[in-house]
Image (cartoon, rainbow, N blue to C red; front, side, top):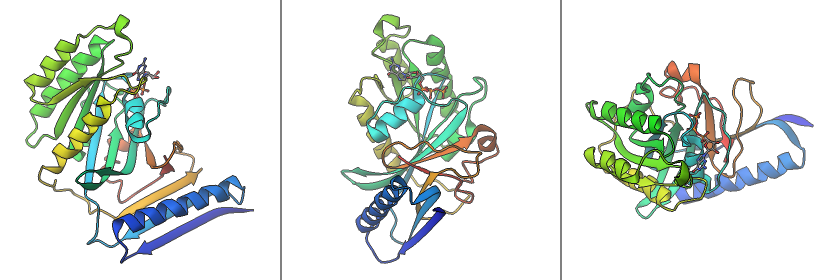
Length: 279
Ligand SMILES: Nc1nc2c(ncn2[C@@H]2O[C@H](COP(=O)(O)OP(=O)(O)OP(=O)(O)O)[C@@H](O)[C@H]2O)c(=O)[nH]1
């Protein structure tokens, strides 16, 4: 049995839909090969596109206090599924091509693990074009964290677009924050707001993400330190043992170790792309 299969394809002339379709087809074939046991440990598909023909990129940071449902919310948006438990203390980078009425968007979402309440994750916020601020309606401290985060955003010179989400609306009997308080906080920052239950699949969650994507597309492109490599990467199986794949449906997840992130890992991720797993 082969342990390693490394596949690299370059489509220089094909249109975006063709490239994405071909990459998805190749990914499916590879998954079948793994299922048949032909390759065990490590499979990588890299698709390079020419620089001129790229899908616009939008980066979203999902920010909120611990346990408010940031990971569940992000995965719900990307996969329409609810997954109850996630590893804490790990920032996760999700990549997915999303189709809006206005065209395709290459969306990257960082789900920021709020390890230390007093530390505002400035690096990730500066990286992002847009920010989804999440609190739990059952936890007042998380609402206060959201309020502080919005104040921090306001103080930035070029703040990302933002949207406020009150999660766990299904737990109304445990409610500590009224819907009116959420709406007022959002209104005071002139941003959108909705309450959702990620567990129960509230449709307004999708609209909230869409709003953020549309808002951030209308903003000037951020000047970034690092050039963008045009890559859709998929890595399935085990790699070096420091990161763990989270295979969820179709797409891409990059788990980033906390320590690494704090050393600008996310900002440098295009230079040192470590691991992606199929969503
Ligand atoms: N009842 C209910 N539980 C939810 C909902 N969303 C998330 N949860 C639960 O809340 C807990 C925390 O969810 P996570 O997605 O891990 O929260 P997080 O904000 O990413 O947590 P950290 O990574 O620790 O900061 C899990 O037990 C989820 O199952 C919801 O809408 N309703």
